[in-house]
Length: 365
Image (cartoon, rainbow, N blue to C red; front, side):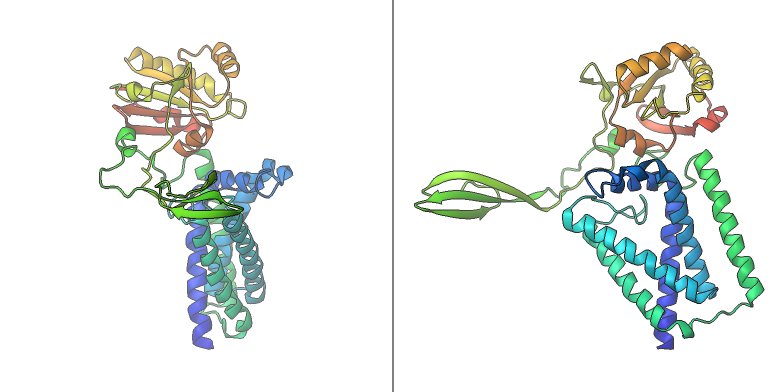
């Protein structure tokens, strides 16, 4: 039992630290995932939406802290109870998502590791079993550090997590796991290789044959059945290849101009997924830096999911020298975790990406 407890202790502690740190690197991204869970179509908890970022920060710091506390054996009873309650909550959430097919990616490991809903649930079940082992064998969890050093390590972890979180919130994630990181060519990332696996669908054809209903299942071909066709249900049984970048458009008056704009030798994108939620004061400096870019021959465009009236009012109020194009809100949230932010591209390749607090770092050649 002692050996089993210590194996479980290492696995659970390390996984909680890794999972927590990945999300701590991008708390805004995890808050978007929580908003998805709180939405009307999932858990229907709209009153929690304004607190999504705060809850995100609390959860990710707690994950790292509990992992460290478990490994060093600090406050074992409190730590194991907290781990148990946390994993019970996560297991319920991932089961709900998987069974009802509500959230296709739990966000357990941020954008670093993508898990299907059932994979996420399976992972949580394994962790639940391991934590139950820890719960039953609490007496075998002993520390190799004295109590004062345990306190120091715990306090240091809490302070370090807080400072790191503050940094990434006011700049950008230190490690970019998303498909729009610096160096990526957006057009290349949208291509599907010729030999890429294709999606496989199963079709359940329903017919009325005589006085009975008959269902015939095929992989696409219309079945030869002598009867009255009623309907068909389609089920995807195997996902096809999905390129890293998909659903990327830059629309103006209903026309997608992404292909031509991504061929620009000098392109600046001002990204603001929702102008009503943007830090509007940042547009004063954005006006200055974009004017500099325009003077040096750059094409400058705004990209937002906001309506034309909102965009026009922002342009007029801050005297911006560029127009806004429409892009899907989820895509813009994926591109950059800042509202607003600026990207600099050369023929579709992202060369610079900055938070609105770091506009001074931009370089226009």
